[in-house]
Length: 141
Image (cartoon, rainbow, N blue to C red; front, top):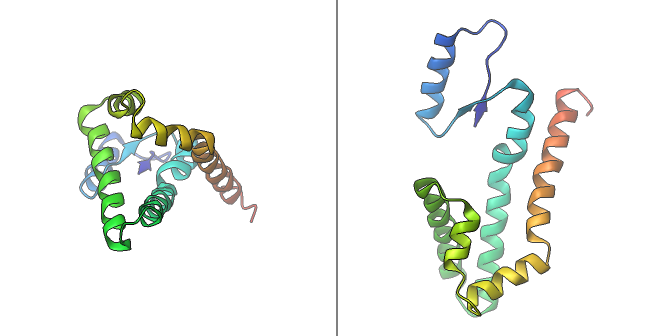
């Protein structure tokens, strides 16, 4: 989550709100001009990840796994991958490269994702959500 100081907020106020928000998750202070971008990424982001988990599970079912097994594996894969990014502070591209063996299964899957526009679709989702947040903040309903 992102938060910013209002015109009358003091440093003490920002410290209190930061402590409160970080008690229930990860919150970052950012300039007010960036709040709609934060909305497009982390505010709308859970829906993107739910869609990813669902799609991965559908793929698992397509190749013969039960729905329950596929869903648990997909969700755990996302959880573990996110945890690695946060704990190692390594760039996701570096982590991806570390699990892609030359000529292996993972790089074949990555190639399929790239060929279907996965990266461009994820970027477009954030941009579209930020644009809509801009419209809503200007009362362009």
